[in-house]
Image 1: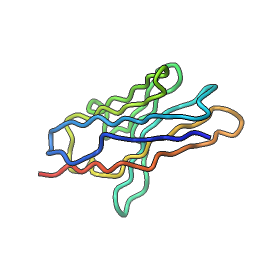
Image 2: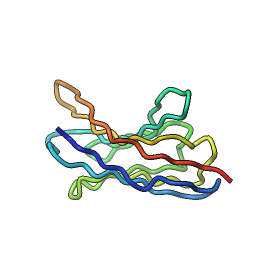
Image 3: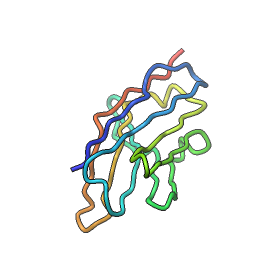
Length: 118
């Protein structure tokens, strides 16, 4: 069992920045991938960024060059630095912990609201 606690969401003006944090606790062992996903009202949840155990990353095309995902394994924490925010970035952002074992089990945070508006 993995518990994910997110923080850092809020209201920001277009062009501004936010940094989301995701603190994991519980069964943090083995090889796993951390990720950030988002879902806007009436839209499907989408992958924003993922980071593997070795630090390799992948980003949605819509956020490349603006967002940076990182992880601090010693602190069991993942981050999403969001720069040059746009109104279309407005969504609930979810932290994800995916076990790279035979189950591929996913754990999710509760979600944190990010609103980009002038």
